Length: 134
Length: 134
Length: 134
Length: 134
Image 1 (cartoon, rainbow over the protein chains, first blue to last red):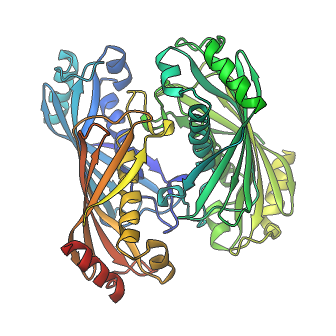
Image 2: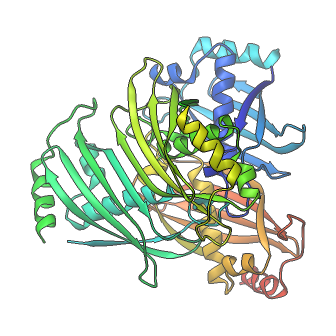
């Protein structure tokens, strides 16, 4: 399952180089994986309410071409690996012309409210396993 | 009591107009009032730990001149009014040449953890009253 | 003409109070007015390319109820006044239940690339006058 | 040369997990490397004015422990490699107790105003070579 999330570059996301600031992509990846979880039948919001937090423990981004103000981008996201306490996502950001602008990965650790590692809820684990195989 | 807080404009705070984005000032005001509370003998961090939250209920900014990347600014902040459930701050942002770049005010409401209005802790109220008169 | 712009609260827009940080609204207003300009038949991007910049010279926000992570909001925006060198927008943020969360206004000044005031391009001025009367 | 840059966690940098949002570190790395360039005898601001831009082409972060609101952190930065068109920085974020919170690297490409790769100015190249060997 590869999930597409539309993003439109905000003015506040640009910098004085005239392009989207490099930190914006990390925020877009976050929007994309929350969207992915929803498309997979889960909900990050309800996970947090049940006491399961997904904290970023690793972030890697390769910037190939800049994204510009007002551009309509697509963040394509998919699962690289799913383990009980760790989930790895991969992302590609493409523009309307289909150019690959950016690639990235994040690894997320499942934590309880005290910040200690814990296994994903069983239902979420199953949905993610299924989404990875699709 | 007028408290000066130094701020240096970050690259990530600029936009493609080549100036500090207008939302940056609101974040700087927040830095300044947390610094003010400390200078007044209190601590916003410990207030929150004791269950007293200060939420912004009003924000007003007048932008006179732009702030530029890497500029060393001073946010001067002071109290406009102190009431048991409401505190009003005023701010001025000046650059190294002494030019007034921006003026602003915020009104903050004191809330409990459930988001309901409550009076400021007595010690904080007294410190703020004193800081306003100084 | 009252234009609705959908906004979904991003995780990166929350703060440790568990609500959307108060600076997020100013960024959403910006998204809304760029969307408004497009709906009115203009384009902020092309205005900038032609050398007409709209800089925020005044920002006012009243916060009534907090916005929460993942909420689907609507920013309703309209024109309060249109003058050759100054445009005033008004905004309301409502949630899916129709609750009014926030109200705000911004005044924008039309500048050239050197940051000097200049009149709006004639075509934009006419479109905005029309949009205000609708 | 290992350069220490002080950072204090802003309230606006926290998220509803109660910790500094993971994108904040990338902005702090940027503050740190601009500070490093100054300590090395150069200035990123003047580089840009001369038409030499440093764009992030790679970003990698490992998050070990969370940073909390109001914490006083130190970002230690140093050069990993210096080539005419590419510069690699490494970073460590530590708290006051000396705990290592985060590690990261960025690779920056030197571009001209049109976004094309170009060699670093000779004086900057020499200063960075020297700073790497120190």
